[in-house]
Length: 329
Image (cartoon, rainbow, N blue to C red; front, side, top):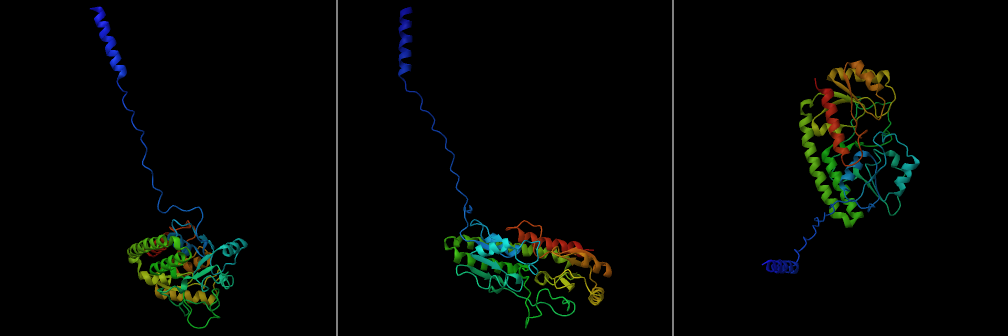
């Protein structure tokens, strides 16, 4: 009996030892992650330079995924009064594609860009087809005969206002123009530039609708500006500037100019006087006190904002917010 049990146990052990071991589970391999479609290459295909922050912002949006443009003029400096530093001149020399508004705004670039290298493309955006250009406003409300820092007295015929990016409809034209120039210089990424431009145009249309809603409560309320740089914004959104302090300088106002502004502001019921951060606020404070109005700040360039694709919409929203804040009862 005992020997039989022993033999049976041995037989069971032999069978179990001959059975195949369970197959090992295959290793789990995570699904490979696809690289982002717009991953930025190590080196941009085109060395792009934009003159001012708003233009740089629009170009950066079009170039998303293909590198970043360089910015020539920081938003804290005025393109009307700038002189090139050696580092800025070097950046200009190294660029292969330059976007600027044109000599009517960045006069300091007129001579450096007059004779570019054969391999450099210079795009004056003020010449883009489809733009709505407005002439500078004349008359004593808009021009101080003793102040000509924009250099317009030497020009004949109508002088166009070059602050054209402050109309979102014009910004959409600039985006298309920038995309076309980039596609020409970098055909391998032409589809990317066009797709980015289409997205940017849609975002600019949405921004325009947003600003229309925000500014509607203050449409028609009169105010004074530091210099006549906002009529594109005013025309687009139904705003009512009634005069300007200067053509764009820090020179104190003379007694005659101060009297003219005081009389016009009172006649029109101006509620606010707006300074610009690129210039001293002393003149604005003096005028606001003289006419009993509030003082505010408007900035057409985006000082203090992070350069890049987000600067342009942030600049436009800040303009609207500051106008609403100062013009509201």
